[in-house]
Image 1 (tube, rainbow, N blue to C red):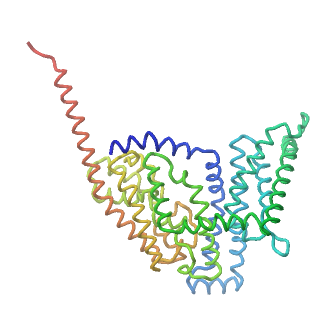
Image 2: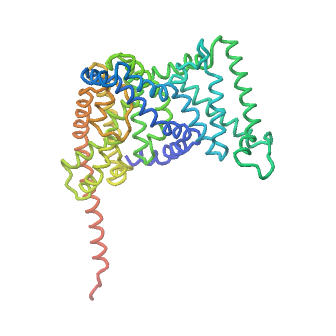
Image 3: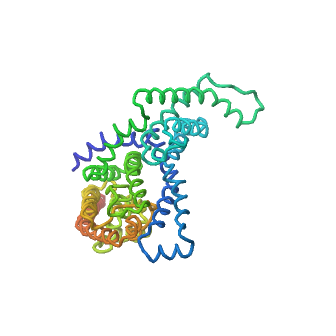
Length: 441
């Protein structure tokens, strides 16, 4: 175990730390985080519109009329339907700010570039097929590339300098003029070239060649296991696994959730929507209490822990853990860099990923059709993300019970290791005291 730990500390942790701090990945992560409120609101609008209780549907229709779902439909149009446009603006803004250049101008140019690349419908409107989650891959790449081009041009001599005394907003606007013109000409030329070669768009080309295979792979059990394993391995070494893997998780699993939500909004049963593995799948059925399913660890501490330290940490961590905030137990117990807790912390989420996948695959639990805030407590989240199914709650209870039972022997082993360590320290202290006693001759 020591050899493995030393190898990880020497080779793995420095690489993972550099990846987690990489400018572009941080911009992608922060870009998705910024629009998360709109994603959550949009998914709740769909959930309310399609809440699977006839009494509720009849009550709303009688109260507001048959067209009462138009309210939620409009919210969906302003959130999920333009998801990629929002992501492009947000990522570009954060990346530009990291370079200390004009974030607003960068985001506006990035959105304009993305619209140039996006196919239009027969009535000259943008196609919702590509402004939603299906266009995320092109959106993320175009936001990064356009912002980098803008940064290079903005910091070069190819800008218009205004005299002193001109308002700052005007100065920034004119400084961005030439970079914007160059970028839009390049993007427009690229779109014309792709259209002449493929008779289509960059979206269709990328979706067929890259995004579709990635999404198909992302919906598999092996891919979910890999994501779960890497997330917790990073956390064990004190690295924020959720943030480091965030760009991958968001780019692959949000489009899958969007498809589920859209089909659910169109009247398809939550059992019959296509995708099992989505972001709410991981958040609601695996990461209960936070990464490591630490709500189960806290429950195990209350059941079997004897040491005052463990029970105090359990009491202090429980309120936050109920809302999936687990830093108190991760660093207070600790779990981070605790060799005894490595095995359960990494393997239990993998096991729960497997149980959850098969529970949904056999049809016992509906697939996820809503995004809830990551702080939503278990039980509530299991009910909401499955479109109002009690079996979502039952799966969470089963997973929590299983995880608690699996954590119990490691809690006991960790306590024994701490006791042994403490006895050795006390023994050394007594030996030192004996050695330091004055000698009488």
